[in-house]
Figure 1: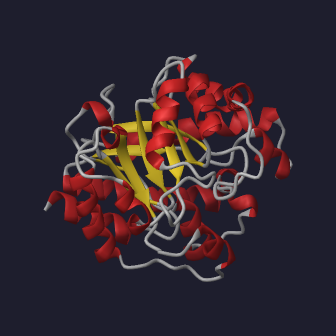
Figure 2: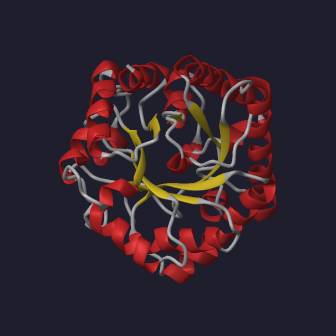
Figure 3: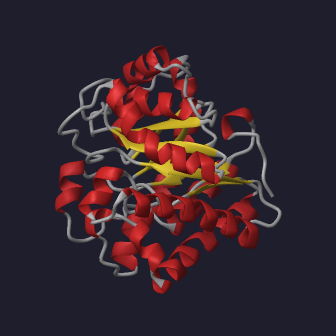
Length: 310
């Protein structure tokens, strides 16, 4: 089942996935250079793992009466990371197209009776934790235009940019997506102090993107941080917080630097994380999309659903 109604236009809760990459590495034992999932789609065992991962999330959505925002496995499938992995633009064009088709096939085979949106995923040009160099808005629009163009023409319902670290890149992405007439979502990474890696407060980053973008993003998200890292940055009843339509939090309270050095998975406490999502919803009345990030899996999603639908 498909719908043109986006999460921020609906009262329905939408479930999305959790820490796909950390699950593939730590639970399934895949070797993933550059933390890129898309090369696994070329392997039979990789494609089987994708289905194994997503099938229980479809079922969670069904059991809890939520919609499902189905992400493509294309977070690293952009030109710079592709070059790092030895893949040219022709290969990346094929990869992004195939990811959309794979998502549509999962929707067809597993999504019966569910409101499922195919969400084309792009990631930052550089590291999602450390913005070593920052593009201008125009550079970011030109750079990300390749991938968003492929995803849009392949027929996604929307495009989301995850783990963005800075405002100019976010504006560039929003402008590139706007040119194609596809809804855009911007999701920022924040540090343990609730600020972007470049130092901006979340409130200021959202306001700056809304002001500078040719078309405002449909909504914003926060990802790859524990709720304790950003909850105090959201005053109750603040107007700007209504622009936050989703959260994909870590279960770990570790900093990004600590997570980068970790050889074992810190998966936190799923029950505690679920309760913290319920608290976040009191501060974020527009929060319709919930999922997880690094170190989270189906257990965490189940507890989040239980806490929010209780």
